[in-house]
Image (cartoon, rainbow, N blue to C red; front, side):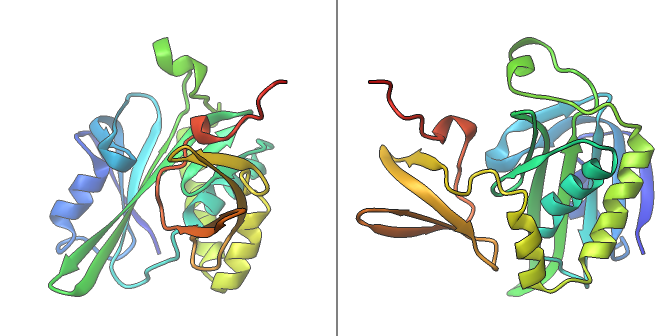
Length: 223
């Protein structure tokens, strides 16, 4: 059962969970109307004003990382918005990123004490340089939050293989070519553990969360 705590402004919902995880209950949701120092993967900054920004704290039920992008695309689908997943954690609509996920783990010694899942969904049109690559969805914030949490609960009942099979239905990179370290690879599939298999003539490689950007998707040269 998720319990929601709402704040008008926070630096980062993930950091709030991280600094207070011992006092917070399992499946606490920290929601901020305004986030001033939000972080994406690789410490990228992300400031939000009108968007949906929240973090979920798990202390007992550690869900698979592939559950969360799947929950978001299923929630968007219920509003007749067709979305795809760019592995591992970006959600795209009409080729533009509308949502990102940052998953962090807290350890006590060698023991996993908490998993924090930060989610940011664009609900307003971006300006400046972001406008070309960032999309948004026109959905009520509270309604979308409720639906995402509902999908998280529903999907948590599935096995890892069932989750992965559903994830594959929205996996935009399958069969595409990507360029990493100046080498062209073909994306094979998402594996049941959430890793990504890529292959070329020299062999295969397993990605565990390394950066695959939209710009790394290989475009065949025009002859």
